[in-house]
Image 1 (cartoon, helix red, strand yellow):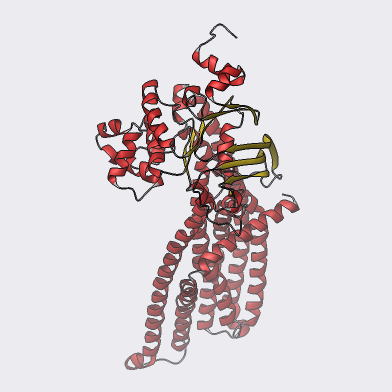
Image 2 (tube, one colour; image 1 turned 180 degrees about the vertical axis):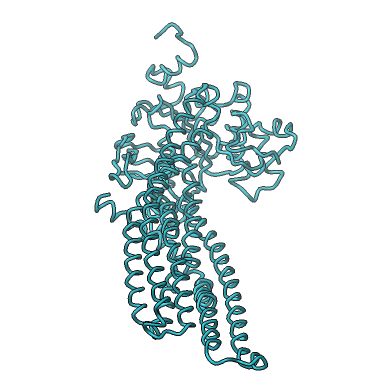
Length: 610
């Protein structure tokens, strides 16, 4: 790994720590309780008990104690041991309580932050990522906090404090031994840290491979109908198997490096234990160390080596925690491609006049990137100096060949992507200076692919107007020609649609989406191929409903099926991001241009032409 890559990796780790510290500091009393109880637990149970026992051994090895004097002589030691163990166990349980509370609250705060970040990112951001991977990264980011917090409270602090307490307790009585022990501990920590740096990128690579595997699984399962209908199960399995093998390879590299680190640190532990055995066997003869102190030396050192023996596993868990959090940390730090201006004001639309003024727009897609190389940005130009005026209340159809810019224009109107140049005005207000929420609350949008939640039909229809009454929901469904099929369902409006509405047919999904738009009752209506999934009879029925819905509203209708727009006030024909024709249906057919060509194709006016 190059120096630049190492710096980027360290930067991501620091940002992860910053995010985690924010949610920890938000509940600092619990964090302080966790720290204090950890110190009490370690000192009382790991050092208090051996210290009292050492005093007892020294007292026993001194002058003999009569049987009748045992309670008087050793009673204080017994009481001390009871107190040490009682308060030590209290600290242990309070420690568990504090950590549990920390993790519960932190999970809520981190999940909220991830959700807010993802839900407020642009459609460009989401179109370049797997939804399944984003869910996996969010879960791993939350799990990373629990991982690191538990290792901090249950491992790192106990390990550090065990070393501090060991040195503090033994230094006054065996300074030479403490000096040798300290030197060996420093060597141990340096070796563990150097090998930790070696394993860190391997953990990130393993986490990245796991995220890629999750993405492939999500992609295949989401499109399972296409997989099955084309008989491509074996092909998808090969892609998944390749990603799965990458995970195995990455985990194997991490395992080998961690195992090597374990052998090195275990060797240092053996040296420390040899050192303590030498001192215990010769300590009394060479330095006059009492029996109780020798027991205390061995107990403290053994406890210390057991704690340090956990460092390998602790570093491995920390590595895994930072590796799991890596991708979501980058996402949380990624600027919003579409964001509200600092002084953004709510948009108020009373008429519905729309002006596209000298628009220039190109899709920007990141290609590659990550730790190995910076991302390249590719541009796909759609509009250059594009202008279009739509008077209030006018019903406008946008037609043209695929890729001409029809849907992109509605995307820009909804501000799902931002312009590079130009502006869009609603009733004279620049939408880039308005809050996005207020903008979209003025527009009822029905896309080509109906967007339904895994919720009831009632909730899906009322999504744009949650305060709607049952009567209003039923009326909207009736106007959208959806009431009949909904009432025929066993659970009616309470029917759960399934993920993305998979339990409904394409036409049923679109009618539910249209009912949602009808109920929303917004001053501007955008229909993007909203009737494409309807059969001819359903389309005829719903055209009347849409015609009524569009009365008194500004409407933009994107359509490939020209019968959908033939009755509109105006039709705009786009080609390669430019307006090539503009007029009514009759005017454009008579002109004999691009629109007439498309119309004749669809109506079969010249079936013999190529």
